[in-house]
Structure formats: structure tokens, C-alpha cells
Length: 317
Image 1 (cartoon, rainbow, N blue to C red):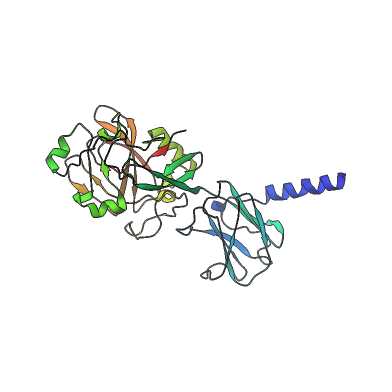
Image 2: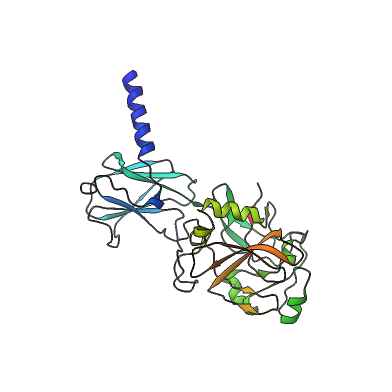
């Protein structure tokens, strides 16, 4: 029994000390005798890290089968191989660590953190359906809000006129350039007066995030200097090149929906994304977040309440 207990303790210690955060790069133990393990950006269909195990050196395009995990606490071993293998986290997994070992030796393997996990959908009062994602302890919409009615059924006015928009002190929305074709991808732009309306923008059980809730998200993803890249959709399908640092490793899938300035002018679609918080700064400004195509930062700033921004909702605790 003592031998069995000692063996169990050794295995636990190996599992603990063999785990490495994927952000730290590839495991370097015995690199000449085992496959190299490193991290690449996730596929759009999967939320979380993907690691590549390569028996012939990292750098060639992976062209092989996948190893999938049924839970994020699973450790799976692979034998020496001459081709690359992607290891991917299944949609619906819980957040935590996924580990893969080489030749049954976890000390030659790697563990990596799942930052965001797809977690079902939510429907607003208009019937719009949104993907949702769990990031740390928070559950967010993974798409921008599209609703045109408050939670009680009252209409949120659409305002297309440039002059009227800039003079509003009540809630309103618009499409970028007043074109509903943009709304399909990017959702609607709302002024801050719609955000604070007591009738509520978010579906039941959800709310527009506070400034502090945005900070919790950014902190979990490594702080303002780096979280922008982890929030932005990867690639240049929507973001302008170079879309610096974009990995969407969180699953948040932030899009560059542009914004409407407080004088009614539309600006910077494909270059910028702006999102409101419900937190007021003073009589003229409220807090929001800004992501840009050529930086990795998530920028916290105060903005004119008459500006038109995107909205992401967060689930009530």
C-alpha cells in the first residue's frame, strides 16, 4: 500500500511540474529525442489553444489528424511521429488546463490554458440569437447586440439623421452608414442613453457590462496591453491588415464595426471597434472599450454619451 501511495504521489508531482502555460512557448526538455510542442492560434471552429506536436520540427504546415479531449482535465499520450498533429479543445469544454504528453512522459509534454469556451446561445426580445462564451468566471455574448426593442417591448428609435443624432439625450440606434447590410455582421450602434434606459437593452438575465466588468475581462486575458489581441477576431476577413496580435484565443470574436461620432458622422469600420459600458464618468462622458486593427491593446477611455458604439452583454451573476 505504501508503494502504491508513493507511486500515486510521484504521478501527481509529475503532472503538476510538467504543466506549462502555452504562452511561455514550447517545452524544451530533451528536444533532440522527443517531438517539439508549441502553440498556434485556434481554428475558428474551436475555442481554446491548439498545440502542434511535430516529430520533424515545427514550421511546416500541419497536415494530419486531430487528437481531441473529452474534458479539459484529460492527459493524453502520443508516440513518436513523423508528421504534425493538432490537439484541439472541443466546443463545450469547461475552462481549465488541457495536457498532452509524449511517450507517456508528462514531463516531456505541455499543458495549456483554455481561455474561452463556447457555451450555448441566448435570444433577445426580437428573436435574434447570439453565441455566448465563458471567459474565466464571466459569460459574454460572442456577438454584438442587434436588438431594436427594450426588454419591455418598447421600440428603441432608429435615428438616421446626422444633426438629430448629435442632439439626442434619449436612447437611439443606427446601422453603420445607415445601411442594414452592415448590421448583419456588426450589429447595431447605440448611444449611451439607450444603454442606461431603465427598460433594459439586454435579454432577461443579462446586462450591459460595467467598466469594472470590462476590467475583469481584460485582466483575465493578461491586462490591457495584451488583451485586445485575444479579443479580436483573427485574420483579415473583417479587420484591416495587419490586425496586430489578433488570435481570438478568448472566443470573444470582437469585430471592427466602426462607430458614430457625436456629430452624426460614421467612422473607421474595418479599423476600429468600440463598446459601451454602463458606467458614467461625468455629465458628458461614459466609459467604454476600444480595439484597433494595428495594436494589441484593449483601450479604456471615456467617450461622449452621444457617440454610437457596439454593445456586448454579460450574463448576470
